[in-house]
Image (tube, rainbow, N blue to C red):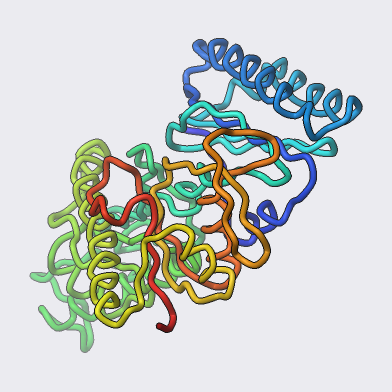
Amino acid sequence: MLYKDTIKEKQFLKLAAQRGVCLSIYLPTTPLTQDAQADRIVLKNLTKAAMEQAETIADKRQIEAMTDYLEELQADDNFWQFQAHGLGILVTPESIKTYRLAYAVEESAEVSDRFYLKPLMSALQPMSAYVLAISQKSVTLYEFTATQELEPLDVADLPADFSDVTRITLQRDRAPAGKLQGDEGARILQKQFLRAIESAVRPVVSGSDMPLILATTQEFQSMYKPLNSYDMLADQGIDGSTEGLPEEEIKQAVSPIVQELRQERIQQWIDLYYQRESESRSVTDLATIAKLVTHGQVSHLLVEVDAVQYGTLSAMGEVTLSDTRSAETYDVINEILIRVIENGGEVLGVRAEEEFPKELQPMAAILRWA
């Protein structure tokens, strides 16, 4: 099992509002406990680098407090026993917060008057999905994680099988008594079964932005979709009965669908950008975006999450760029995306290996008005 932490937008913005001496450390990790010692050594080295930066903005007491937090974390055998593929550590002289990430991150140690949060964007917007596998003999809701693992979820009141809802075994050649006869009766019972599934799944997926992929027969897919109330139900599903199908085969079928849905989302963003370009409602210049976002004019922002530009951004949106990292500067791209979210805008974080035009790198904005 992969041990990972989630982060919600409200929590993200609370971290973004933090001011003072803020230390942000990120490192790739391994979920294999026997190999975790190497990760602890990396953290030790990043701690040293961070404290050297902190000397310019923190006093001796503050540095000692943050060092103590990190050394205690390094020595915590229980903590290192349960890891994922990446780790984010946010430290102030008063607190330490850790985030086990389902994806790898680059090693970094950033010290400033605010946290460096851009590496958490993929946790805020995971490339994952729900998978609902339905057959007459079993029903399971999975989460397909960012590391392409298929994890069963506990769902209260989820029917175990068809007979759990209808109290009968569906047999068209032995139609139920009364009015439920033949194919017509079978469809009524099937809808009853699927309606019970939808009712149980709804509270689990509600409020999420992860797609829901159906893994079942085409007949059940066509019957389930009209009953569904979740906005992110994917048009494309895994066709065929999952009865007796190994989870590994379901996982292999899900992966290309999730990749396709992700690329579709990026392409929809790009199409909207060029549509708005003809209306003078799109821009790629960083300094211009910084001014516009400060006034709440940016509705959508595409950001290359691996790109970094050091400098400062004033309360009025004036950018001062720097070629070097220091405790007096921070990643301006990080600050811009935070302001977009604070003003109710939508941020789409993409990685360099994903398909999007170079002219939109490292960021591009769609405006609310011209």
